[in-house]
Length: 101
Image (cartoon, rainbow, N blue to C red):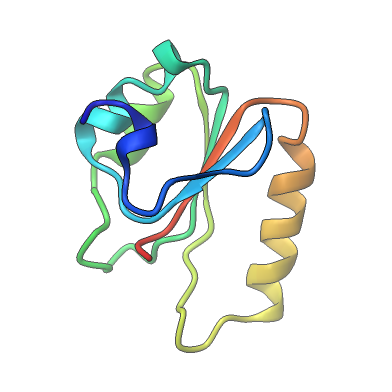
């Protein structure tokens, strides 16, 4: 269960892009060994699935960490614009995107 492919609702979109719901500390800690270069986290800071140490776990592996905290009850145009920019900026790097769902 240390593989990001075992995360909740994992989906491979392309050779460069995967998505999932919530992830574990162990899955995050093994991202570099799985070839990931960037991670986009859409969870709000206060979400019950949020891992406070996630930025450090990811960045300690020299993986770009992008957090766009989205309130799924009221997503904003700014959330969408930030998401589009993050995906465009990481499009040629192996990237994982996750939220809780």
